Length: 505
Image (cartoon, rainbow, N blue to C red; front, top):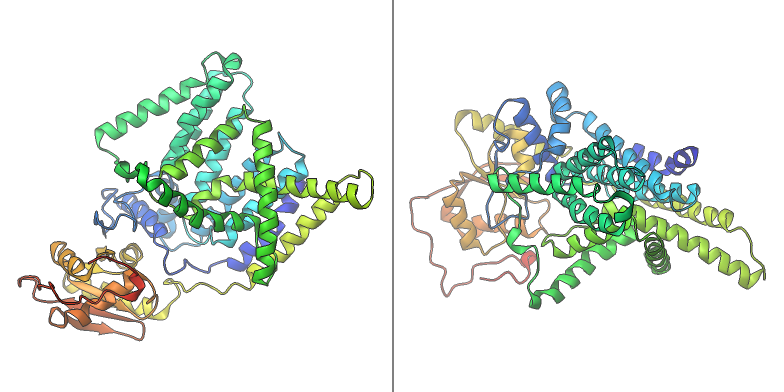
């Protein structure tokens, strides 16, 4: 374990540097998790959180998230509120558990020092992408997923106690994030490949998970988001592949870290590291192809292709495999270099460990130069805006449109809806249909399509909005004339902001 502790030191340094930074301005998932937890603490409905969901803007966030993280947050919210620093402590502990379970599983296949370096790379890569600043389900999900993989791959005898542990870990992963459902086909695949070891007992958790999931979906207690878009139609496959490459290629680079200040040097490094990472991980998984780890990687990768949404952080659960592959590739490169230049075989552990240590040191230095993100939590103008909204809400109920609706409603308890990426006439219609009383214009984040659309409305329809509040960053417009028919924009330009690219009319 001391090897893991040493490998996690760079992560600890970076986590201390990031302490209390606050969420970047575009983050909103954490606010919804906290709002769910607050609703539970206050005895309200789980979905009574103030967030106004619109089916034309599902990418902002669903009506409700799975309850795993909100239930974990309930004690903190009950004792210290939604702004407690213990929320960040919880995320740090979750990432440490993620690294620990990944290390324990990887050391069954590679040398302990290699497993430790892979876990350390994973931790610093996630921390470098602000993975622990605010409550997010990704790191806890990663910990539960790898705990389940470890429990399955270390099970020699499928006793009822071990079956109960594995089943509980699987439910925990699914309660944190819907992709935890990949454990069902992954364990089924593993059970088929290792049938002689258990004679079907490994399928018991599969049956329990599957039956429970079917009952939950049939009862209507939870709806599967994007169920109609899970698999692309044949003509869409090319676009889906291009989208996956665009999103997940940088995520692979994140897993390999950024050890240089120069962008060109990092590009050259990533070209070499990617060959090592992909080649090493492929060789590792092929050698241990009859394991739950390999089955999970295969099914999780298939899920990433099938899902209509993608984000670099969705690759985090696979970071330990990518990192371990890179470590294996570096070891192999050191062996080859020794044979070429020294004309003899040498132990590659020391030069490989030294090379990767330099990657760690350079990456911490590079990340320390990353500017602190512009956070609504620490922006004085945002604090003034939220204070005004809270006071205004006391005198007259409001329903607000804002580019980050979930943060606004968490901070103010004012119901809020996000901007819809559609032409302005559609947006104006949605404002009236959802009884939105105010919109928030902002100077910050003006390059965002959603914020640019909201900003454009008062200029496009000056007779529909009136300023009620303003500071240097934000202006609040009251919505007027909701009883009037919508304007007819046929044959006239509708002022689509340039930030929205080719948004149709």
